[in-house]
Structures are given as structure tokens and as C-alpha cells.
Length: 354
Figure (cartoon, rainbow, N blue to C red):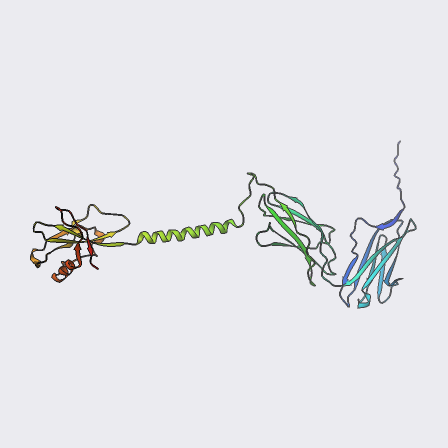
């Protein structure tokens, strides 16, 4: 009967940083607070750890009222208690397991400060309406930091910003949504904490992919352009309506030749409206217009020719005229003179004396 056995092999490995964990080499701390630093290693057999403080020269650290060290397999920690100004500076840990050379890792303890600018900011993917950017966080200044990513259409409009909290990951990415197809964008970023902001990264550019029809959507300025055009058209339309709504009045004097060679003046009032002239008018709304006969020897009111002209009902309550008085007629006769001689029954235009 066949049997199976398992065999385990252990491979000696010199101590080195673990590729599975992030090691923070710069630690920020407020005064009178505790600060900790950690080292993750990969080694077999398990290594030994020696922590040191370096103030010109490096000396080994022992547990006491100022320091506390603890190690467990592949992890070792150092805690500085009640931090003062003298505690800021360089620390290091020496890791060895008898295989190969010992590994030395350095750390810096600094006061709280503004964060350091992120590095390796780049676009890893873009589509018609989205783009994904990625970056590597730097020192957070000793406190929690937040990342600000800003973008805009190339050289146009205000910057739009998106806030992302530091997750502690080695690399962080963000997808920007709602972009315009086939459009060039600019973007950059920086970090900030309660102390202040880091320097900005370099601006980078990217172009979204074309839409299905190969064209881009409307520009953000299109709404403003359309709004301005509509507003201008409304103003023009209003002016046109005002002009069309105006009524123009004209008084015309026409001289006619009767059988007694008397000058006959007809005073008519023409009201030009939007709908033009009226052909068939109602008798019930007729308004009397006076025709007055004038001559140089005198005037007989009883012989005045009375003529009626039919007007539209729209005019029935306005523009009414009464027979002219003798004084008014004689005055009218003196205000106008013939500029052409009579020939048959032709009508003559009259010009007013200056």
C-alpha cells in the first residue's frame, strides 16, 4: 500500500526589509507626545534587532523612561516617550541573523510640519468621459494628510478640485468622471494637513477619447454663448415690435378746381396701422369730415360743401373733425400758396409759406 509523506524545507535568508509592508522612515511628532517607528523584516532564522539614536555618533538604546523597544519575530518597534526638542533627529535599527551582512535602516523624527509633495503623479487610463490618475504619497508631516487633485479643460475655466484622504497605501489612484469626449485637460495635485500644504506637482495633460460620432460634446461655454444670443435676439425683437406698434399720422392738403374757380381744400387724416388700409368700412361708424370752400373775396358758410368719408370702426371714437370756422379757413388760405398752375382738373401740391 502506497503512502505519502510531506517534507518541509527551510531556506536560510539574510535579514532585509519586507516587500509586503510599507516602512515609514520619516515620523512627525508634537512635543510632549509619544512617537513610534517600526521595521518589518524578511529573514530566516528570525533576526535580532538593535535600535540606536544618532546625535553625531550613534549609541544603542535601552528601555527606560525615555525609550521603549519591543520585537516579535519579523517586526520590531521603537517608541520615544514624551518627545522634547532634543529627541528630534536620526534613529536607526540594525537587523542581523548571522546570515550574510546585517541590515541597517534609518529613521528621522521631526516636529509636525507641512506634508511633502506627492511623487510620480501620472495618468494611467482615460476613456471618453473618464480619466484615472495615480500617485505615490510622501511624508505627511507627522499628521493625517489629504490629497487635492485639480483639473480643468486646457487653458479654460476654473480649476475643479477633488479631495482624497491618505489611505496609507504605497500608491493611490483616483478616477475623474464627467469629462467631455475628445477634449484636452490639465491636472496637478498637492497634499495638505493641519500645518499647511505641500508644494504642487508638475501639471500634466491628457486627452479624452473621441465620442461615438467622432466629435466632442458641447463646450462648457456653450450655455453662456446661447444665453447671450437669445438675450440679444429678444432685445432686437422688442425694438421691432415697438417700431411696428407706432402709429404715424399725416395731414395732407389737396387743392381741387371746381366750376367757379374757387380753391377747395380737403383736410384728411391718415392713420397708418400695422394691418394697412381698409376698403370696406361700416356706415354706422362713419365720421364727418369737413370740406371748406375758400376764395379771396369772402366765404359763405352756408355754401360749404359737406362730404363724408367712411372710416373703420377702430377710428369711431377718435380723430373726429368739425367744420372749420371762417377765421380758420381764411387763415389756411393764407398759409398755403400754389407752386404750379391749374391745368384742367389736375390736383396741385401746396407748400407752406415760411
